[in-house]
Every structure is written in C-alpha cells, then in structure tokens.
Length: 239
Image (tube, rainbow, N blue to C red; front, top):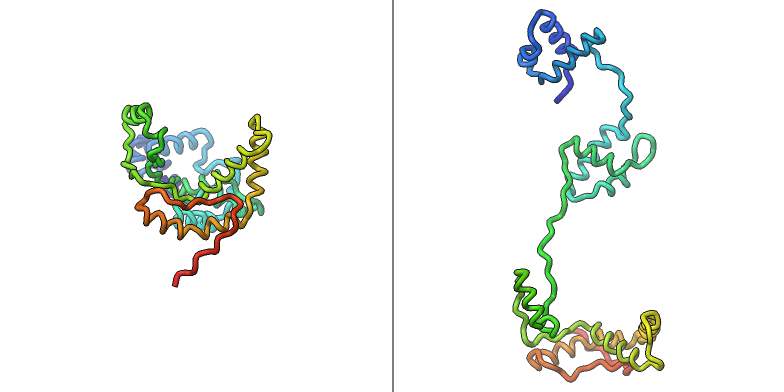
C-alpha cells in the first residue's frame, strides 16, 4: 500500500482531533485501520506526523537498473537470478548478489519459474536381466508401464564395437588385472592404444552396416569390427 501523503496525514490528524474515531477516519480516507493507528500513536508520542529517520541499508541499484533487471526476466522467465546478478553492477561498482536480484523481482511481483519436467523414460530392452521374472514382478507391483520392445532390435551404436575390442584386450593381458586399481590402469592403457584409424574405420562403415542390417531384416549380420584391422575405405559420398 502506498504511503500517506503529508496532506492526507494532516487531514487525518484534524479529523481525529475533532473527535472522530480511528476506524471512522480510516474508512473516510480509505486507509487501512492499522496505518491510521500508527499515525495516531506517532502523533501522540512525538507530536509530529513526519516519517522518523531510519537506518535502513541504501539500495544497491538505481531505478534504471531495477527496470533493466525486470526487463531481462520478462524476456526470459526461466533466467536464474545468479546469471542476472553476475551481469549487473551496483552503485558502488560491485556486482549485486543473487538475493538482491530476487528481492527486486519480488517487489515487481515477478516470481521464480522452473522449467517443466517431463516424465522420466528409461530404455528397457529384451536383455535377460530386463525380462527376468523377478524384474517383471517388480514392474507390475510398482505399476510401471513398459512399452513392447521389438524382437529384432540390434544395438547399432558404434561404441559397442569399441567396448568389445577393449574387453578382449583386457582379457588377453598377462597377468590379468587382479584388483580394481590395476583394472582401471589397464583400461586406460588399452583405451589409449586404440588406433584412431580404427575409430575412423568404424564411423565410415556405418552405412554398410545399416544396409546389411536392413537386408537381414533386423537379424544378425556378418559385419564385425576387428580390433587393429586395416582401415576400410570410407563409403562414397551421396550423389
């Protein structure tokens, strides 16, 4: 509610001095009863209707900066206050805090907004752990819907071939890693030893693998990446 003007305060005190009740004066001037009570108490205690000096902390931003902050958040309602604070310089040539930005937005009746989160979806294929009886019972008990997965659904991700090559080379090491730390070291070494030509060969062969998979109607194909094999020429560009 806006502050009472000096003229309105003088009028209110005159009406109170004339004998009108506090509630009647508040209704007559369209002012809240508590506001009128404070004005009357202040006049009785201090003999004045002027605002008392206060020790409030001065504002860190100018009115123009307040409007700029509001404009930024009206353009992007999901903009975080920390981002605006980092880009706003206050009166003392210092960056404002995120709480200062939130306070100004609250004064302008601009409240925080969060992006809508969709339902969580996870991949649940026909792998044995997923189709096990205990897994199916758990999904039914928790009322978790499961979409039907096609019978022929080979994993076309090229990284699977790299994992396979990495696994084979780890198993061929002598001696075989005996603990987690040695296994981690072995994985990092074997990963570094994978030639870049092998990675390029795998990416360039994706078209041929897709064609072979389509001809096999989603079934198994003879295509297999051999670790350390010579690089296969890339497919010709699309005409």
